[in-house]
Image: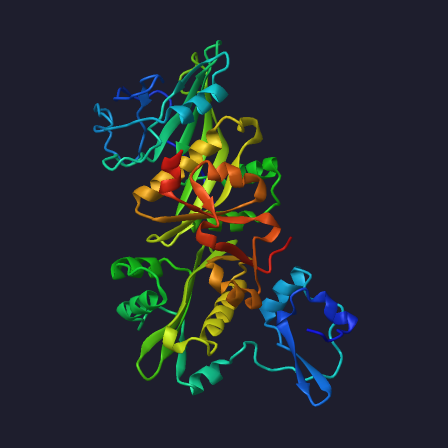
Length: 248
Length: 216
């Protein structure tokens, strides 16, 4: 059974600045990677050469900015040659409510998922039930599992936070040439905010950084446009996806 | 086929599992004796009805594949399922011969080490691989078949089919029901008789393209 034990992301996030040619808030909450020596991640680091695609960020911002103070804090979406490796975990979005409650949406490619939470999420989006043991095995055998968690904490109570799985995407791969993305899902309560887009985007970027050149997926007809906007092309050069005796 | 099928056979929505021979004025129907896992898969998909087993007296082949292992062996071909004894440079040559780009053998080795199932045919005489296919996946739900190749000098004799039939069976035996692949347009006709359907229910295969991304 897989359970999630993220080192408490609450109070220990240093805030760094980086060069950014955009109008979004200039703050990056530094990711917490369990592999890093605690001494190193506190150091200031500047991300090199990041250019944000204004249109992409506008679309995210307009979805998120309501009456709250929202900061978009994340690395750029375009892949630069000299880009530093994408951190395993970082905050995608942070929202502050007027009552002091802060909600962070955290992206993680570390892969630790509570399968009970995942099962509940699959139920929520209306997917057919799959045996828990098989779910666990599928995750274990996946090359990469990306998750979105919502972390809510009140400003008053230190260290008291609610963490919830709100999205997942996974990719299988041969570690060298090809990767295929499966099971992309976002909690319906959090849909329409660009989170699914961001999650898949990050997944792609991590795969590309690991030098997996061929990233593929199979899309239901209603989400072909969604993936087209992320850079996927259906039937490139006439190449067709085929399934063995599919159940309709 | 212009034959009139008895009603029972209409449960087959893929007439590729059966074919007929004309002998004189008689038509003999032949159905491949289904694999245990293959038949289970077909049962669950409603392709074969569990209650209406064929009862008419026609001969069934005892072999579960188009060509049996013995047949292949007698023709000088060995079926192999592991990376051991597979010369990656020879494999790379086969890839190049069919039009794949030449890839770094170290990367090929890495890919094969992380490949769930693979099947290849060794030509006894030269001890070289002449057919190959592999599948990656999560081991429980999904599998994708990649790198299906047959050396051009050995095409057209059923080696590709032999490799594919066995690979699919292996995946089914593991309980993997979702088997997919990406097919170039000119070989769609190779995969269809094996039971593969393109774009079922409107599902599209999509590939990430960096050029596409920059266009936006």
